[in-house]
Amino acid sequence: MEHLERCEWLLRGTLVRAAVRRYLPWALVASMLAGSLLKELSPLPESYLSNKRNVLNVYFVKMAWAWTFCLLLPFIALTNYHLTGKAGLVLRRLSTLLVGTAIWYICTSIFSNIEHYTGSCYQSPALEGVRKEHQSKQQCHQEGGFWHGFDISGHSFLLTFCALMIVEEMSVLHEVKTDRSHCLHTAITTLVVALGILTFIWVLMFLCTAVYFHNLSQKVFGTLFGLLGWYGTYGFWYPKAFSPGLPPQSCSLNLKQDSYKK
Image (cartoon, rainbow, N blue to C red; front, top):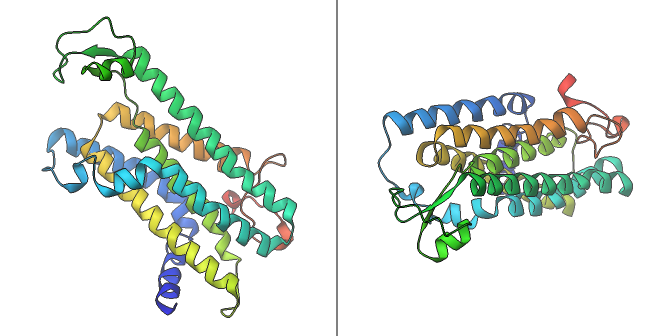
């Protein structure tokens, strides 16, 4: 438990800072552009992380929203109830996960449709020999073809959105103080460590996407959708009265304090 608490203390000192929430979006954009430039001008040699079958990609990134949802749900419930003591307000704040799910579903559907309507089926990865009889990506792949369209980076979108959402929700830790002997302390400490590790995985895999996969325009659009999903909720909608609300910064302010105006 002592090692867990040390790790949690370290994460509080990094991810919970207001400066992290302020500059992380810009850092993600800068790293995406730098990584894309490196990919075009001086590609890095192949590595384990450049293989799409690596463990982090298969078991984490491809289920990024599920991991984020499952860890944020108990974290939001425990920390928000600890601060407010009101089940109604907790349920209101938990609706942020439903909003996030809707954003994830809508954006990925848009990406899929764009790839479909801009794509064609080819006989080889070199994009030779168009197979006009195949009208969908699924049909193309079933027949051994190669579908090529404008493939907006779903990784860039989702990893950006998930990392920023976790950092926003962890800002509540400025107000959370628990007794070390209480089981709530153990639960929150464990969740903070798990969310912190998850955030670092999302940022790492975002960087890998930047330097190994997709072209610049596909990553720009993917990252832009992630930023719009984050800012449209935490920066624009959530500070308003009729919304799930921002993470509570103190009991007296309930859920209406706008952390962006500090």
